Image (cartoon, rainbow, N blue to C red; front, side, top):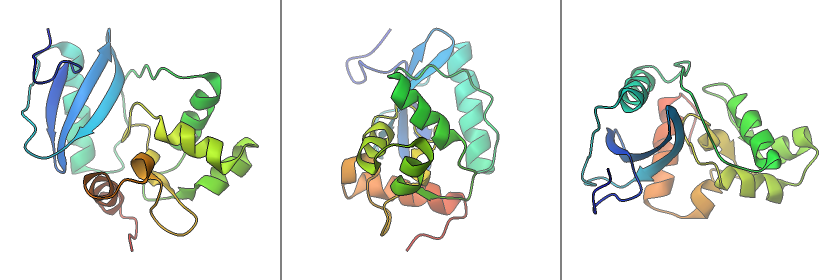
Length: 162
């Protein structure tokens, strides 16, 4: 059951940079949204939420934690290909949109759109994709909180952030 404060989430969990809104599809994680600090939390005692919370805590303690979650990201076959490529980027490493476009025989713009449509950030690590000349691109290029989250995630994973 959803509350009026968070009608789209099965749970809202704390994160070092704010909060995370979780959407489930049965036992699987279908969506994860970054929410700003001071967002009211809404933990849930369900088994899937407990497992996801435990996995996130393991990642916060060890950025190279290997995820053991059931994922259900909804997307076109092309987006699924891009998201699989994101999952192949190792912790502590980054790639550019152009790198991924070459690997996928696609265009940087199409890759950027698919990266921006990633429904499960952190676990599908879109934060590891950079523009050719800097951080850029994250959450459709918005400044402020979204860029602070990307910077936090990259620093947490040991990446040099300018």
